[in-house]
Length: 250
Length: 237
Image 1 (cartoon, each protein chain N blue to C red):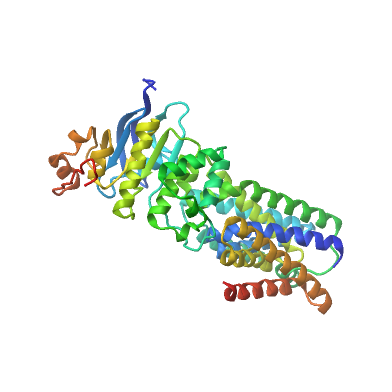
Image 2: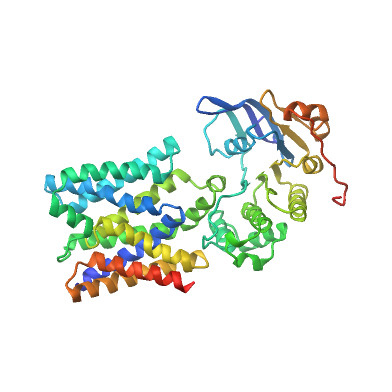
């Protein structure tokens, strides 16, 4: 893997670690994983229209985030339930529009050299997501404890929830290129779950989640390149190992 | 606002869930610096009223707060995961950032609720019920609110803890002029600390000083069964 791709992967790991902290604490673990599949119909449509798959994935993910947010606000159903429905429909539509090999690439990531456009998107989006989570972390923390307390404290709760879902969607899109949408969901969840087990404070959780995501991503990429294996599964396998170590550690 | 001494005016407030009106045509006003207790049987809409007052749910009618009102809100018992890596200090620091408050503000809030600094390093899930409720009150006090809404703040707290919490709230109202709204099932606490009582019931609501609202006849009518309470003396006995 070249230096440029490594920098983008490291930035992606930081964004995934930070978004994951709040996804895990908001009990969105399964929803978070399922949500990543919403990219599929976008990828299929982009391929049909001759566009870069990443464009389609990003549009579908953001649209999925807005749809989940809108239904949640209207019906009071849980994020998890709505994501389950949206995910199933997206998977069905995605399997109709994308063909076998393309689908596998989208799910598990495609090898090859990262283009300049992909690198610029990955880096910019990762910085934007990490910056948003850093700036909004106090508001996210208070809204996690109680929505009434958040509203009484002057927090625009609906806008904050939408922003978080979009940040989540963008994070999945960043990881699609190397990890694939299926494995990117795991990349958001596993490091944050490790951090939740080991941390004693919110700063500690951020530090451990980012650290675990960076170790998994960089070490996984190097091992995959050395062993001539696809990077996504190796990265997730290392993240999974860190989780099992964390079970023993505490 | 018809009167500068009035901090809240509510007129024809109705809140519906689906088609059921949980609150119907509620009218009342609250004077600045007052201590209003909200009582009523389960399902009478006490928490719903608080949620409407802070703008967390849609409603019909008018809720008018005086200009410059700053809220502090203490919710009913929270359903939080026990293993969240969030400490008391994390929570207070978050509120300080949101409210643009100084550290002195947080120190003042902790003194008010008598919560030792050492407790702040603990995860919120490992705190006792009393410690966590006092933390929530301290959280609400950061940013120097002039209105404090407390939804059964002493639920799940032992007797000495309840007394300490009630005393802290009383001091805030009397010494700092904070207008307090308190939902409580403990009528003896209501009788002792409230300057007026809003009693919510299915048929109609009553507002007035504790002596006129907390009568055996009215309580029996509202709760549907004879209800009595013990008024503590000045030593809390």
